[in-house]
Length: 177
Image 1 (spheres, rainbow, N blue to C red):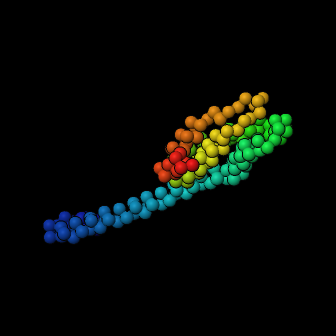
Image 2 (image 1 turned 30 degrees about the vertical axis):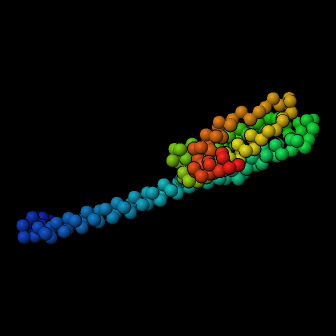
Image 3 (image 1 turned 45 degrees about the vertical axis):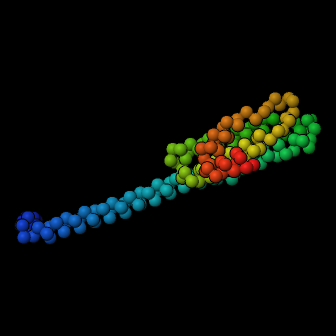
C-alpha cells in the first residue's frame, strides 16, 4: 500500500499533486510548531509571573513596612530630642530596615536581569522603590551624634534608578523635582 502511494507521487504526471501535498505537510508542521511555541511561551510567562508574585508578597508583608519605618525615622527626627529619639527609634533598627530594602531591590533587580521575572514589572517596582528610598535617605537629617551615620549609598539608588526607570521618569526625577 505504501509502495503504491510512493510510486503514485513519483510519477511525473502527478508531480503537481505531490508538490501540493508536500507544501500542505510543511504548512501543518509550521502551524503545529507555532501552537507548541505559543504554549511554551505562555508557560514561561506564567512562571515569570509566579516568581514576581513572591516578590510582591514579600513587599506587601515586610518591605513596605520597612520603607514606612525609614520615612518615619526621617520625619520625626526634628520633632524629638536626641534622648527620646534614641529611645523610640534605635539606630540598629534603622540600619536593619535600610539594609532589608536595599537587599530586596538587589534581589528583585537580579530576578529581572536573569529573565526569571517579567522585565516590565521589575522595572516599575525597582524604579518606584529606588526613587522613594533615594528621596527619603537624601534628606538633610541631622542624626543623633552617637549614631555616626550618613546617607552612604546614593550611587546604589542612582544606578537602580538609571537602570530601571524610563527616560521620562529619570528626567522628571533628576531635573524636575
